[in-house]
Image 1 (cartoon, rainbow, N blue to C red):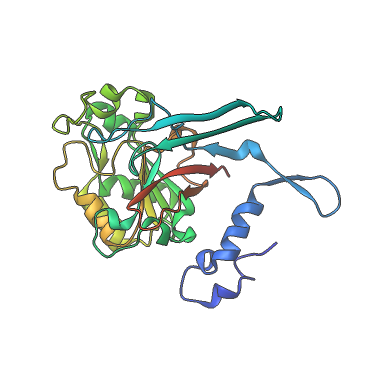
Image 2 (cartoon, helix red, strand yellow; image 1 turned 180 degrees about the vertical axis):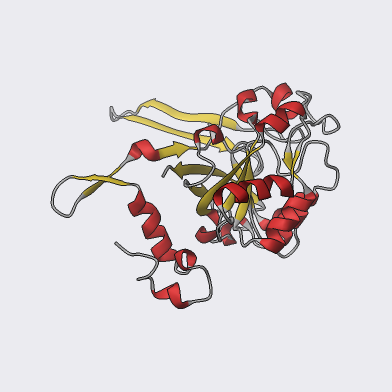
Amino acid sequence: MPTADSCPGARAPRRRVRACFVCATSLLVLGAIGSASGEGAAAIDESRAVDLTYTFDDSTIYWPTEDGFHLEVGKNGLTPQGYFYAANHFTTAEHGGTHMDAPIHFAQDRMTADQVPLAAMMGPAVVIDVRDAASADRDYRLTVADLERWEAKYGRIPEGAIVLMRSGWGRYWPSRLEYLGTAQKGDVANLHFPGFSKEAAEWLVAQRSIDAIGVDTPSIDHGPSKDFIVHQTINGANKPAFENVANLDKLPEQGAWFIALPMKIGGGSGAPARIIAVLP
């Protein structure tokens, strides 16, 4: 089993556990290993995996200006040869449901969806719990003080972390009215949900070496935002973001690993994603 000390990249200036992506990934996967089943064999402890992805179907929430997800049933039944066969088509916007915002989404000449490296889509999950504040204020913006409180309890945000805001908004899914603040198609004037603050995004980019941020709401910017400054800040730093992340209530505030695998859309500004976490 590789360790941070045995990793050949550990002599590089980056923090040891992130020095070599191959070794870091090995540590992640092997960390989920459970009991051995035969010589040289091992079984992954699936009970420690948490699905952070909403199902894509007609109920999936998209930005009010988008049409949403549509599945067109194609072949579905027995063939003339007597075997069953099913094959469908689907159409969807890049930005809706559980998905990744590629850096180019709000920053010219930054990475497209297919260019975002795997290393930027997996890492230690830093969960910032703002459920009480969000319950009191639908438009709450996660602050630098929230981040500092996390660090006072758990230590410095680790290099390569995925910083996740847990607002409790998943309890509203899939009600568009409660989740977005409006159920009206095209209505972007009445959006109300929590997000990151400009100051928190700037602090994470300037003061910490994170890989990405994520939210359990429709956007990393809070609902009333008109300039999407958090997107501008995070994407401008060539970092992706993850939105509509499900089941954040099932993660501890520290110790889990976050893994996102978006569709690798050439030239895409974002992509639907299957996201999981591995619990400590």
